[in-house]
Image (cartoon, rainbow, N blue to C red; front, side, top):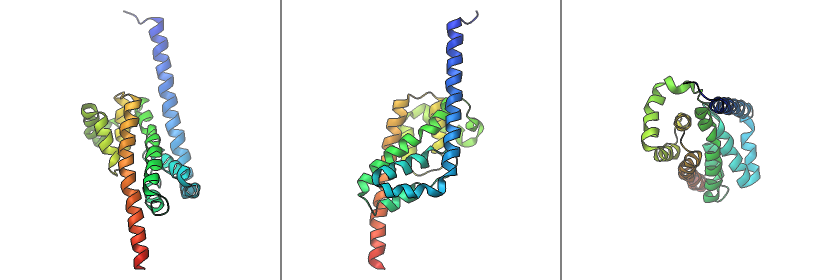
Length: 188
């Protein structure tokens, strides 16, 4: 049985959407990597700057960008809970790049051992796996986001669980910065 014209148009539209998502991820990653040495300057803008730092640091896919170190330092300057909220929200939105890379269906990581270990967790536990993996500092969360995109996890679910995990992680870093830097200042 041949596919209908409507089905063909739907497949073409989905293919265009996937290609656009992949191109957006590549463009974001290249741009953020090119400005990585200037990211700390956003901290001068307070909580909106902290939001941008976390957004940019988490929007890169597989390329390291400064993020939690700046959040650690900002926790000693601003209210740690405000820092955690701004950074957690920015971080969750930044993680959309990995999700979009997976949604695009062009994920090269599908053949890696790490993907093969993380993907079953995403398929079995869904949002709870995203929450746990985003709450702990690890270099593999991009792969978890890609796996969620490939699994077609609803976007709202990915964002909600990622946001909660990011809030947990950023709260730990902001409070660690607030207490450790102040403690070191008292000693010296």
